[in-house]
Every structure is written in C-alpha cells, then in structure tokens.
View (cartoon, rainbow, N blue to C red):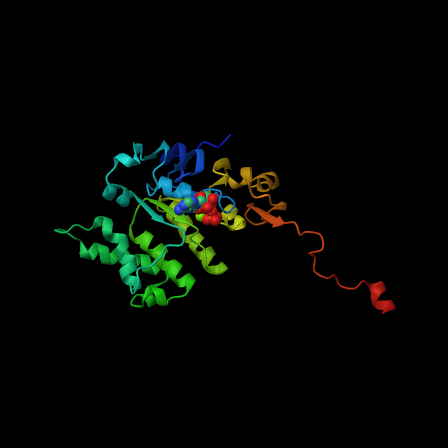
Amino acid sequence: MPSIPAKPPRLTGEALYAGYESRRVLDGVDLAVAEGQLTVLLGPNGSGKSTLLKTLARTLTPSAGRVCLDGKDIHRRKTREVAQRLGILPQGPSVPEGLTVRQLIGMGRLPYQRLWQQDAEQDARAVREAMAYTDVTEFAERSVDALSGGQRQRCWIAMVLAQETDLILLDEPTTFLDLKVQVDLLELLSRLAHEHGRTLLLVLHDLNLAAAYADRLVMMREGHIVTSGAPEEVFTATNLKHVFDLDAHVLEDPETGSPICVPHKKRGAHRRSQPTAHQRRVS
Ligand SMILES: Nc1ncnc2c1ncn2[C@@H]1O[C@H](COP(=O)(O)OP(=O)(O)OP(=O)(O)O)[C@@H](O)[C@H]1O
Ligand SMILES: [Mg+2]
C-alpha cells in the first residue's frame, strides 16, 4: 500500500493513461505529490518517468484520467496561472542559439510579464537570486551554448528557480553534474522543500542520492507505479530487483540511517585478487 502523504497533495494524477500517437506509455497511474516534500521518481530507462512528468505539467494531454493542481483540473486552469504555480525542467532541453545566461534565466520570469505592466526590479532580483543559488553569476553575460554541460544544466535549474513557483518538477536535473555539484544541488532542493515549503518532484537515476535525499520515493516500471513510500520502506533489495532487475545488497548509511545499495558484481568481473602468501612463496 502506498503511504499516505502527511500534507494535502498539491498535484495529483488520477488513473492517468497517456502516450504518443499509437504508443501507450502510462497505464493507469495514480500519484499524489505532497506539499513541502521532496519526492523522487525512479525507474529504468523507458519506464515512463518523463511521460508522467510531462502529463503532470500539462505538456502532454492524457487520453484518460485527470491531473489536478491545487484541487482543480489543470486543463481548466489558465496557462499563466499554471506557470505561476508550477515550473518544469524537461529532460535535455535545447537552448535557443546565442542566448546569454542572464537572458535564459530571465525567461523564467515570463509568466509574470504583461505588455503594459512589468516589475523590472522584482524580475531582476529573482534572476539575481537564482544565479547566486546555482552559482552561475560569473557566467551571466556568456552565451549558454558556449558553456560546459554541467554549467549549462545549472543555468536551466536557475531558470526554473527564477520562476519562483511553489511546485517544481525537474527531469534528471543532475545530468552532467559532477558528484559534488549533484550533492550541492540536492542540498539546495532539500532546503527549498523543508525550509521554504516548496513542493518538488524530481526524476533521478542515482539510486543512492535518491534514497538519501527523498522524503518519498516513487518507483515506476513499464508505465505503472510499482511502489511508493519513505526510502526506508521501499528501497529494498526485492523492489530494486523487481523494478530495475538489479541484483544489489541494501545496507544502511551508518551516519544517517538512509538505505544504500551496492550492486552485486557478476562472476568473473572481480578485480584480479592479490596473490596469496602461498602463491608469493612458490613464485
Ligand atoms: N515523443 C515520443 N514519441 C514516441 N514515443 C516516445 C516519445 N517519447 C518517449 N517515447 C517512448 O515512451 C516510452 C517512455 O519514455 P519516457 O521518456 O517517458 O521514459 P523515461 O522513463 O523517462 O526514460 P529515461 O530514463 O530514458 O529518460 C519509451 O518507450 C519511449 O521510447
Ligand atoms: Mg526520461
């Protein structure tokens, strides 16, 4: 049984069926994203994680079922209203050519701009803060397409933060980032949830980082949600085998108590062992 979220859900998917032309991907998904929590969606390649995120963010229309944002059908809300409540970073976004970092991040402010009225000071502040958070200020005037993959990824995250929405959906935000920057980013996202009450739904591939930072894990396989709950409940060797077909030991981080998985090595894949004392003597 999925665990019941502590706070009322900000975003729900009810009996969602969605896909592309003749291909059905989501096969009756129910999901409730609880307020002020960091929820991480896990699943193998092609299991439907991005399709689910796009459906929840209204980028993709479900063929059946309903997405509710703050209790109201998301398709009945105005686009600007959705954009002021929900920000999404899709997987592998492409940058318009020649855009500077500041201009890209400034695009996060579009939902607040109207032709006849614009709070330039507030927009500039939001962009400044988002750049500082993600440590991209030094690149502000550089062209985004001239940055490294990791620097560019941080700019995209800054763009979503500049949108200043309560709900943030990020599809593989840690791609291209080195481990230290991944950890820094997850610390930042965790603070946004736990200190600022933001609601986050992320797709991650790093199982151990997911188990360490998520309040709730949702595991998907072949368009279904297999299980969801606190990492301590659902991050088990049995679930990892079922969802990912991964053979792994699950241990406990001695400091935090978070579960950690250590994949089994296949036979023959072991490093060449050191010669035994006997072998050294006879050689
Ligand atoms: N635009 C599209 N048109 C047709 N099929 C698509 C499209 N996008 C994804 N698919 C298919 O839908 C299925 C689910 O894809 P999805 O991108 O949701 O998986 P995912 O879990 O996000 O995988 P990954 O971990 O590789 O990002 C896959 O079989 C994929 O080939
Ligand atoms: Mg994906």
